Image (cartoon, rainbow, N blue to C red):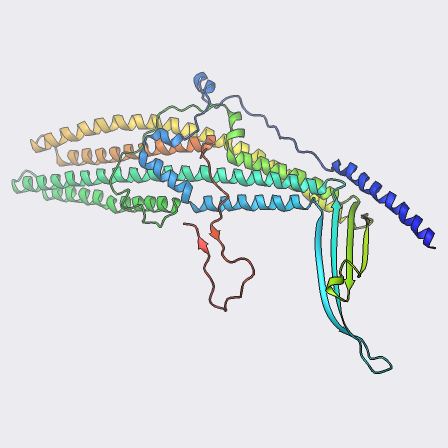
Length: 506
């Protein structure tokens, strides 16, 4: 019997390395589709673009600096550093990186050690004496699931795409953030200009009221004229609170976007400054550029890639799996006997698991991942079409607003001449007060519309750069956590109701 056992053990020692070698040789096998970048037919040029615009690539790097406003540049720098949405996106990157490390770790063997010490009392013998003794045990267990059909390698591949998606999400957040800061800044400066115009116009209209009263006393005007002049002045002054509200809301939004309380920027922006003026026209490149520059399109493509390789992860569950397990243990009645005079046992061998019957659950799980892949592919196509639409809309809006701005500037010049002439004629008694009233009302309306048009040109310029994918192209450190924990190792439990505050990054 002993000789037979030795022969069987020898055969087992020759067989086990063969099993391990076969598993390692087949570890390069994967199931499921390999990801390939999708293709979509795109137009060769934007609608209405001329040959010069087609030949020049879009200028997206630091595009907001071409507005030549130092205050805006500083606000955008502060927003990138302090915005809470950016901080959340950086946390998502850290989460994706940690998840990747966790997934990679599953490819390697795992090992655990154990130990125990017990004090035992055996039952009393026939002589009536009980045997009391100590027993010490120590062990080491190891296991390794060999990735025969690439399920875990597909999971690692999916986690890599997940990291890419998290980084693209951060880029998309920065793109939106910079656009919002620039838009709200332009609106704030626009409100300041409109407030200044309203106050100047109201002061001029009050002067007209005084002039009309003098003419009333001289018998050259009627009480109706005084009432009309006073009513127009009050109407203009009634616009001021509305404009003040709009200005305050824009400043509050800017403060929050930069990571500050709503009123934090009130003093810094209190002094009026010109509305930023972009250098136009801007080159837009070709439609195919958005596949490389738009972070939402790149994010959708990474999500599609991740969903594709997850099919292989699900398919691998339908194939056999092999695990190698081993353990060694020792026990003794004295602590010093462990590993020397104690009993030592060990075991090592493979375990083959074959899915035999699961009522179609594994196949259904693979079909679920295929449907999810299709959904992400459709989402990617939709993101491309949306990007094309955004650029075309921004292009048209900017071009048409520039035309409108030119017409408004012409109307302001004419209404200014009309108002000046009407005032002169009214003072000399050569025209009625209604003509002066209408001329001043038309001038104020035209000047206010011109200011709003200048703001619209800036916001359309910002929208076009956003649509083209222009965002932050500098370095953003996503490795630093927002909350730094202290005393995370073993320590005494704090009394209930007295939590210890963690350090929070400012």
